[in-house]
Image (cartoon, rainbow, N blue to C red; front, side):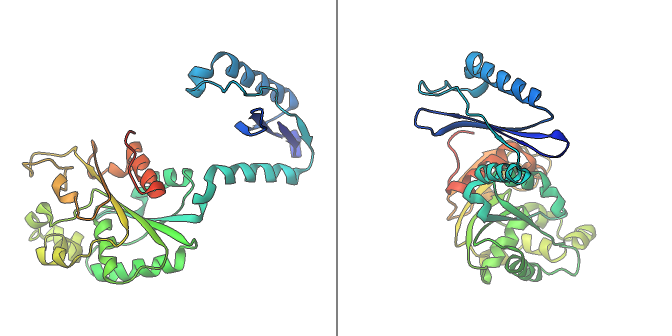
Length: 303
């Protein structure tokens, strides 16, 4: 355990439990007001190991686990900062060198992906949210060109991934008509309309729909456009929703997109989750599937 005093007598406590080979088995870092709080922390932690190991850790402590922590006092404030930075670096691991670029759906803003973004950051990824609008005057090809430029200018890591929601996936696919910056790893599609949209066709002549969706709305109803739309040239997975409605659909759907229209040849993984089209990106299981695929190139068997 390492304690380090800073200003106003604040202490950073680092408790490391090692096995007999001196390999760290469990590490906890906490900030305390006083050394008294520090000793209370030790007592509670050791009591937890002794009496609640199954309940707290969901596993038994290895037989060779040494429960005698090593105590070291460090008074240098710079050392305190180094300890905290080191722990954060260990938590994020190599994934801190990868970026995820997020694309929102039609009629939404990049703030709709705020919750998913936070979960990706917690998993160790750097994140960016591509801003765009599909209102009148914004051609889909122009938006795609801006995506290429945004990636070149803002992604600072060697490897990066793309995660799109709804229309965002069509922009990603349209981007393969051109050339993405070198380093594109994987793609996760959330509720993608990978085939002509029934709703877009039904509302294609509606003045309000034309105003709000403009060129993008026309493309979503066009069979010719979809025939020209490339399939991603990198590994990609699809997460579809099943909590839909029966007013405009007579088949499984997420409220906006039919389940069967989310599938795309070449996809490496596909999963159906009980969420609506509008809020699928906010679900915790959506984030877990997304993170697992970006890290491993496959979906987990059990979530």
